[in-house]
Image (cartoon, rainbow, N blue to C red; front, side, top):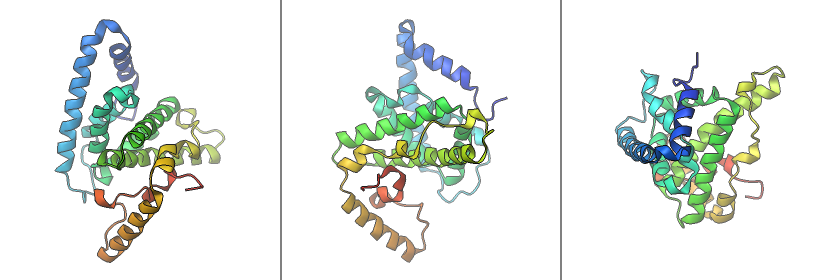
Amino acid sequence: KENHAIELKTVQKVYDLLLNNKTYDSAKNAMMNASYLLASQLQMWCKRLSKTMTQWDDPYELRGFFILMLNPVIRDPEYFHFTQHLFLAASLLPECAKTILQNWLHLLPSDVFDSMVHSVQQYITCAVYKGSNIDPYISSATIILKLFFSVFERRYAANDNDSKGDKALSTTLTYRDFENDAINDEVDLEEDFKTWYLSRSDDMRRNRSHSNFDDSDFSFCRFPFVLDAAS
């Protein structure tokens, strides 16, 4: 029995059939239109949720996020309109819901988990090179990448501590895979640091959690795993 709320092999078969079989082109278009609509509706739903929630009563309500995140097209620039709304919606979830998603991600086979990380990185890279400003879609994708990074650290630590660890929970990723060249090359990190420093001071003054911030407070310094040593 799988513990990540879905029948993974079934979801993968459906995506593979609809995305790679030309016989189902019309069904593929219908699926992507429905996926975009669902991501947009999830975004509006998440905006109404309280960020101070400490308990999520029904984890299965989050299956929609999980299934959409498994869609291979999230790394395809042709479908970035869908991807950005999905990441924005997921980033708006309260921490208790994100913890559930992290637990499910932790149970994914290594090839699926690693591929999803590369997909998120692909989106961030393309978005940074394409845009002149760090918009809410880039910041939300970085928040989602943090979920994966937290899971990666759990897997990485498990591999180091247990030579007999479960191969399904292993990973071929390294810390370098979470660094983002586009961010390090294209973003004005001096200004980014100033934003982080000022927002950090404001957090301390207002006794606000450093994990809760507005779009205007976004800084990659809050997500140091994307930065390389030179940065």
